[in-house]
Length: 205
Image 1: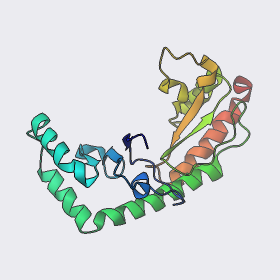
Image 2 (image 1 turned 90 degrees about the vertical axis):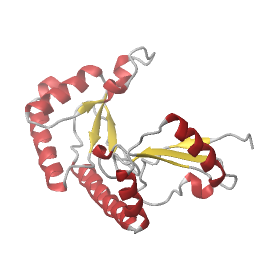
Image 3 (image 1 turned 180 degrees about the vertical axis):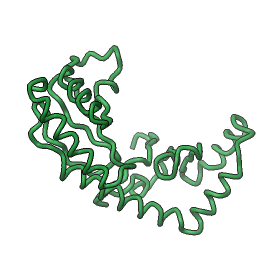
Image 4 (image 1 turned 45 degrees about the vertical axis):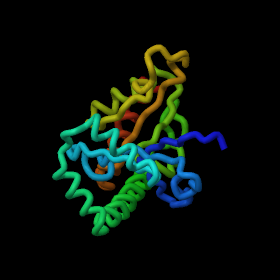
């Protein structure tokens, strides 16, 4: 309608499959996807991609030739064959099942009675989830107690811009990644968290 471009990433895997990708809904060739293979393969590939409407491909190819003349082609050729022979799609299906299973293990085992923590949210996409916490002090106390038993958690407050106008306590939370952690390790980590946070109830309350 406004002849605008929609530029999006391809990193949000929908476990339930209910949402169609934007490109599948696009009838006017206005959707561009930008991404890398870091999450769906491994970061050491250092390989990105741009999915374009067919009419734009020659324009972007010419511009890329001006800006980047010496990109490494061996890895690109291997990945192109990996995709063309169907291995990439099978890999995506395998990783989607693994991510769903690990997400379910985290949701099922997360302690529900942690002082100051909001309920764990439902997650239908992505490889992380965030649990809101009622204050920055509590966020730091929860993370410190987790670190004491060897469980790594990230504070949501670390992801805010320093000059944000949002009050400090409203930035607090826990960021939980589950993509690369097998289910038995998730269960073990959650048990350790329950013990650590239970032993520090006086500090956390």
